[in-house]
Amino acid sequence: MPWKGGSLYKKGIVVNNRKAIGFKGIVTKAELLNGGTGYYNTKTEVLPTTCGTGSQSGPWNCKVNVVAIGGVVKEIIIASGGLGYSLNDILLIKSGGNNCTFKAVNVCL
Image (cartoon, rainbow, N blue to C red):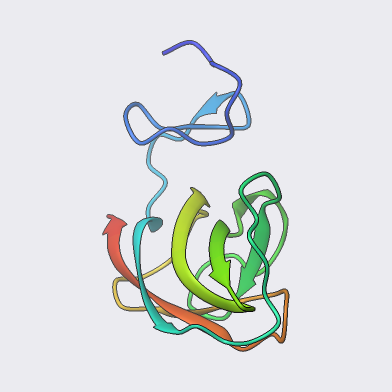
């Protein structure tokens, strides 16, 4: 599959211009657990995450966009699913008050 400019595709997964054959633990769906405080809408800015079993930084880290109202996150959109995560991992979004958490409810294994 040719690279189309994104960092991660759900089909024929491509990460940083390379096909990610054999890589596991890519988060594809999130369930919001705690909306946190101090967040703002990030439809164009990608926010890194921490915690869970996956990569904690760099290109393999799970990254998200959020929809926030009054500083509280109401929706999480997976921008890049990262690598090495496990089903039901709890992740923290590193922004705002550093207190918004979500669960990885769908992970490519």
